[in-house]
Image (tube, rainbow, N blue to C red):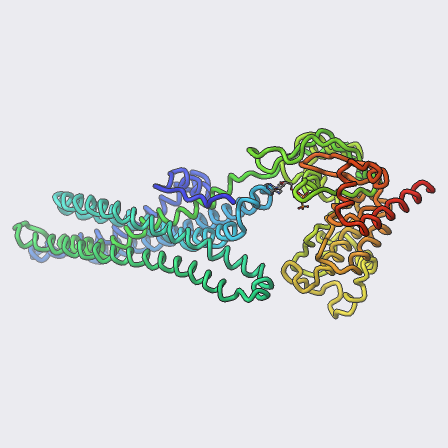
Length: 607
Ligand SMILES: Nc1ncnc2c1ncn2[C@@H]1O[C@H](COP(=O)(O)OP(=O)(O)OP(=O)(O)O)[C@@H](O)[C@H]1O
């Protein structure tokens, strides 16, 4: 399993750039910024005009004869207020469009990437982690980050507006404003470091909870069987405690910071007020009012702004983590080959030429230069010790990992073919049958290509017609998550039904061992023999007797094919691996296996 990537330090500017670029092109980004600036400028304009108006009133009062044209002033003020409303609306609309687009684009991009990711990616990343990106990180991008960015932008603009307005009244006020800003910056540096570490802790402690829940739900029957509920609850509690502690630490740090910031701001405004009394300056009433209201406004928002600014850095890790998934390794995209006949593969001949495979680029080869030819309609059994590479041969056939060499099916090299064209042509019944949540119909025919008659016929072949017909919903009967409302045997039969419906020329079976009862087992074997008589069938055998009547048996050892012949012939090679495997099953079983092989050999001779 790969370690969770926790990039430390500052968020790179590329993360911001890529996030904004997801929202729109550069022109649109500039327009959004302009809309924010416009809204702030209009609001500041209204404030400034009010103080200007008050000053005019004061001047008119001192010069007794002067008459103010108040109607005209009210018109101007109304115009400015209308402009403020229009700018605020425009900015909201731009904001909404921009951030919704960014969210949707990021989500769609990583969803597309994940659905094309390599098997290696899924081996290295637990489900909990992937879900975390789609739930917590995407949730934060959807609901949280747009507000934070908008808060930060608005408060930066508000601070800029305050500084500009107050310095218009008295340029000397630039000095204390600059001092205050510098002080804020220093505080933020300290706070950011703390909150970032705590936030990261919060993130790290969240994934184990999700992993624990997923694993517990999957292993519920095992947990109950071993009465391990208490242990799991304790384990869950300890994960949860750790996460809650981290979360509480984060909330406390943020509140403490807010309190100190408020205190500093209050002291600052008090000092400015006292300065009006100490320094004997001739201010108009309107100007004093403007300075006080502007600085008081600053006091209210600045601590929130800085907290949000720090929060932005923290929550941008969600964007960073989501963006990380835009670069994950995906399966190869190949150009379609137009010359392939529609009915391909017609016969089901499989030819491996110098096929090698490894699971990870730096690992040793698991399959080593395999060369073999399977004739159309042949029934092949693959045997070998555990870890020999039987399943890996199937993984190579489905090209789940990087395959070197050529795999030729009916004269077409599938390593050159788009994966979505070659994979559906091979049916598989895995050891652990896979059902999707949905209906039985959806499980038999996921792409809704076949008529009901064909589906019922397939169910009849696997002796499930009666069971399904008894359910009122019939083919639309619900299959719950991973088919948990069906027994393993039934699941296997539905999978077999799915393979019958598809009617492919090639069927691969990973033989189920302890999972199904002998009756279902023999039903599966019988149905395969009957329904897939005209197909190439490859069976990975864990019990030798299921493949003793195969046409040929492939014996795999350490990723190489050591024997590949008719079972009867292999049993004549007393120094061979297959012979040894048969002998180790015990005298009676070995005798029985020998008899099956012999009978089959004689039958083949006759035909
Ligand atoms: N996803 C994987 N990543 C890395 N190595 C793997 C992976 N799957 C299997 N291997 C390794 O590849 C080798 C062959 O495994 P494979 O599953 O093909 O064996 P097998 O013959 O099917 O065994 P079994 O009968 O136990 O299922 C083993 O050494 C195994 O450890």
